[in-house]
Length: 250
Picture 1 (cartoon, rainbow, N blue to C red):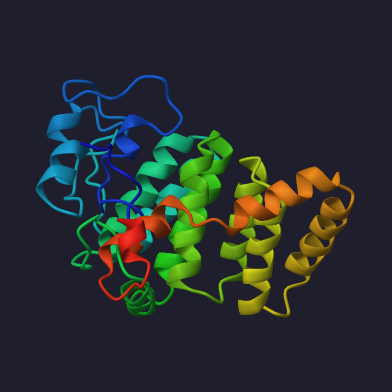
Picture 2 (cartoon, one colour):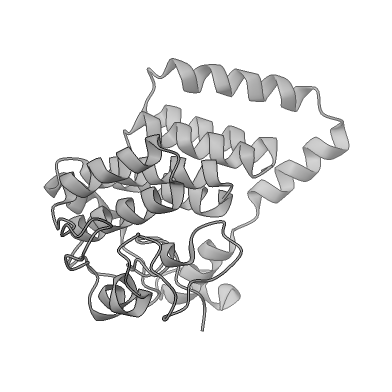
């Protein structure tokens, strides 16, 4: 069984954040919950994640009941972020996301469709994309690069015109040490949706200059790698009966 992935990218669950992104030790059911409730994890957030895709109110560090309102949870996440408490911030961002996406349909892999992401983002007045963007930034600052990339990409799926989301993708890919060609393609995708973005334009031309200065062998290899389908694209092709390459993908 694969580990729980980010909400909307993998299963919609807060169990991922209970391990403390980037932490060395996994939080067990009898360990203290990292949200600072003072309770064991299996009596607090792990219990809420196992029972439903949204959290139930729980006791905070001073005995207060944590809200079930996405806006209030978002503000708590921002406060934790500003205080440098990144594990707690990621946890509160996840709680807020859980509230916003409650009831969202998912496929057999636990993934939400682009159409549903756009729908739920609209119904939340744009909160979903902004929450994903903010949590991506927290993950990046923790050094949890893979999840930072995934949240940023999911943000742009929920709101294709979200300039900050496209910038988050570009920055996270750079932090991941992704091929310059892949970073350039991400910038160009962002500019296709946000043609007036000066920051994406500047990053695009900086990347083009860097690519031009690469040795020919490196440039050719990166272009080849970027043209090959990703694992996710291959898996989706195997599941799509209408895909002419289904037999190859499967």
